[in-house]
Structures are given as structure tokens and as C-alpha cells.
Image 1 (cartoon, rainbow, N blue to C red):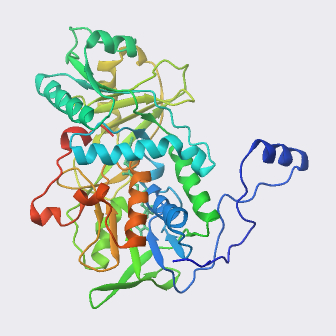
Image 2 (tube, helix red, strand yellow):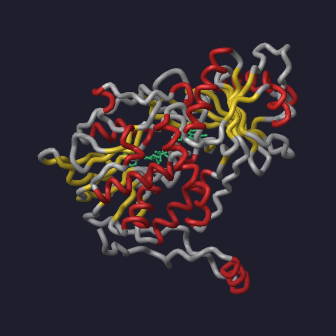
Image 3 (cartoon, rainbow, N blue to C red):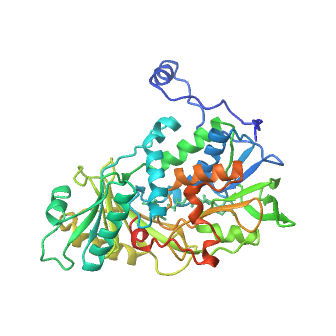
Length: 427
Ligand SMILES: Cc1cc2nc3c(=O)[nH]c(=O)nc-3n(C[C@H](O)[C@H](O)[C@H](O)COP(=O)(O)OP(=O)(O)OC[C@H]3O[C@@H](n4cnc5c(N)ncnc54)[C@H](O)[C@@H]3O)c2cc1C
């Protein structure tokens, strides 16, 4: 896979350091573009469809870990224009199944060193993650998760209302609320990251290693001959490639259809909202599955809210008043004192949901056509581990053990990896 594509416009990426900061301050020179533009070539070793965190991480690890250079990432829009620039950036590994816990833990570990690896400040803050339980059924699921987590070496435990109150003093943990809080699954390594920085950091580092990123390049068709993928047709021309990787999340089933591969995925919109910034008062990420709401506070002081997916399948990315109204009423059940804060913005993204709420990663019935999809409402945190594993699969032809359970064949073969209890409204 070695050899350089390299027809980039503009100087190559420059390392960020205290020295380069001083030099730029003195010379007042422009910083080079974070990634370069290229002419679309007629062939590549690997074409990655989708410039979200999954596509960019896959391309980066292909170049960084396997020496691949003739890699193109094509996107119909812009870097991070899909879910990767619209999510609420929660990172955690306290899932329900051993396969899920091991996989997401690898991602948390990669996030811990990602700023140094990419030479880009991704602002990963492990502030702790609380999943509240308001009924006995939820307590049971939290205990189950805590035990699976501990067996996999993950820091996770069930705590009571008094300990919750210490972690989130402004939360109403009294017994007199409509939905009293009985306990919570507390996961100290969970936290938030700056999603744009992760996307840009991967794009910049991949570019520096020779990966070509082609924005505004829509895939219109996928060529398959005798059961093998041979290339893609894009809005900018034809590309031949022996390996094509589908990293298009909410659009994944449309892209797979082009190759004649059917995915058990339904796309639903998911909305989020952000308030004006206020002084820091909320350290942990707080999630309530029963109230269909979660909240965290960014380093800038804004509260970021999310909820469940919209209850209908759609490719629309419009916000709705119903969402804001429901969100406000549910958040105020938890933290009544924020009633006067103003919501600044709300937005929506697309979520590709599978029947078992676990992703689909690996090979398909079409040789050379790989998928890294089914990321639902929880795929941002998975970007590093999925990218690393997909790059290994594309480079070696062997499915890494970490993602073996998430293959497409599990659906017809009835080997589901049920994560609904830990994935829905947990992000
Ligand atoms: C509101 C919201 C909140 C969320 N919160 C969290 C969270 O807190 N934590 C978490 O882990 N996850 C969260 N998620 C989920 C997460 O955002 C996604 O799972 C993840 O970003 C998917 O990344 P991706 O790289 O696979 O796809 P995306 O980032 O969606 O990228 C797919 C790309 O494919 C491109 N594309 C589509 N069709 C074509 C085509 N025909 N040709 C070329 N390109 C094409 C799109 O333009 C897009 O850029 C949230 C999602 C939303 C919407």
C-alpha cells in the first residue's frame, strides 16, 4: 500500500508547538491550511466514503499504522458536516455487553492520548458520567452494567442519591419529585470532548501523511464486477479502487444499496440544543433514560442538551418546537434552578439505528466493500477504535478480534449484541 499520491495544493501541515507559535507571532505569517485540496485522481488503493470521525480516523490509521498513502476520503459536503459535527460529544465505555464494553474502552484509551498523537488539542475532559435510575427496572440494569463493566476492568459503580447530590449539587435528588432519583450508574472515566477538534485533528494528521480529503465530492454509484467492488462514481468523476469503505452513518443504507448490499438500518433524526454560557456549575455528564434527556456543561459554560431520537424515520435535519418544549420540561425536573437560562440554538443530525443498537463493522457479501456503520446516537465516541480496527481490516484483510462480534452476518445468523439498555439516550 506504500507510495505517495501527493498533488496537494498548499504547503504541507506544520507541527503546532510553542516554538511554531512564537515564530508565527514574530513573522506574522499565515498558518498553512489545516488540510490541503487535491485534484481527484483516477485511482486509489482505498476510497473512504464520508469525512466524519469514522472516515477520517480510518484514513488516518491506514496511513499511520499501515503505511498506506493512496487513500482518498470523499464527502458530499464538508469535513464533520454529518453527525460528527452535530453530536453532543459524550465519551464513555460503560456499555452492557462485554463486546461493547471492550470496544468502547479501546476508544476511551485512544482519546486519552489523541491530542498528543494528532498534535491537536481535542479538549478531552473525563469529568465523570452519571446515568440516573428512576425506577427499580433501571436500578437492575445499572447493577447489571456495573458488574459487566467491572469484569472488563472499567471503573463503574451504582451510587445512591446522597452521593449523586455531592457530585451534582444543583440536581433535585429529593424524594418529592415526580420521578424521584433512586440511584445512578457512576462512570468516572466518562466525559466530553471537543467534536470539531477531533474531526479537524484527524483530517490534518491524515493529510500530513498523504491522505487526500475531497470535500463536495458526492458518491453517486458504486461499481461491482463479479462480486468485487471496483470503484465509485462521484460528482467529480470516476475513481477505481479495490477497497471502498462506507463510513456514512445516517446515509449508510443508501450507499450500501449502491453496491447491492442491504443493511438492517433505519435512519432517525436526533436533536440537541445549547444554552447561553454561565459560570461552571455542572462537572459531570448527567443522563436520564427515563426522562429521555441528558445534559453536560462545556468548558465555555454552555449547557448542551440531548434527548431521544425523533420517533419517525426521516432524512430531515430540521429542529422542532416539540423537541425544545419536551426537553425543557424534562431538564427542569432534574435541575429546576436553570429555569431562566436561555436556549441559544438547537439543531438536528441523522442516526443510523440497527435492531440491536450495536454498530456494523466489517466485510459484506461484496468483496472489498467494507462497512463501518450503524452508529445510531452513540458513534462519535467510537471513532478512534472503529477507525483503528477498520484500517487494520482494510490493510490486512483480517477482521480484528475487537470488532468481530459486530459483523453484518450476525443479523441473519441471530447473534445480536443487545445494547439498547446502555445505548439509548445514553450517548
Ligand atoms: C444530536 C446528536 C447528538 C449525538 N451525541 C452523541 C454523543 O454524545 N456521543 C456519541 O458518541 N455519539 C453521539 N451522536 C452520534 C454521532 O454523532 C454519530 O454516530 C457519529 O458522528 C457518526 O460518525 P460518522 O463518521 O460515522 O458519520 P458522519 O459524521 O455522519 O459522516 C458521514 C458523512 O457521510 C457523508 N455522505 C453521506 N452521503 C454521501 C455520499 N453519497 N457521498 C459522499 N459522502 C456522503 C456526509 O456528508 C457526512 O459528512 C450524536 C448524534 C447526533 C445527531
